[in-house]
Image (cartoon, rainbow, N blue to C red; front, side):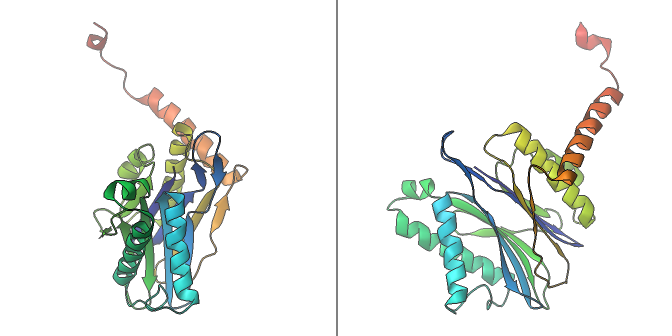
Length: 244
């Protein structure tokens, strides 16, 4: 399994994906699930994937091939992020059609994809593309998406994030979300791929790979654990009738 988070904020975009894949306890390995596209100064896009690894790799490879072979349209030539989401959805449907012969088989090979980015002269956008190829767009009310093993990291995101959360604070919140997930689910694991995009910069950030030895990640893991323990101690004790 996997866990991916993408945030659409007033100050920019945040993307984090884990790299663990498993097909049983004897087949655990690491694969990149965060892919950057774009042209410096013109457009920036990130694709994140969760689900069947063969399907996701086929979709990403198809997107990369379209650019390299100058097949129109491609992610470097589409006129909007909406068109980019349509292109990815169509690529996903085509891959699933090639490998499956029934809806039941499609479910076996299914995957989910997040797409976020910005094209010059347009606003930043973030999309959640479903296994069927259709998609929804993030809004001010729902400024982030998660795919994969979302349940352990979702509570902190729901409580702490909004569209107006500062970029650095949102990054901290997202990393804590991953720490909570990694602690509770062995199918999600290090290293993590992180990419932060400041709004309207139209730069192609190189991103950061967070390993088990990353000092900052270790620091916030410990601080968050200490905060939770201290907060629990400071909460008002239950009234006596709870023990009757």
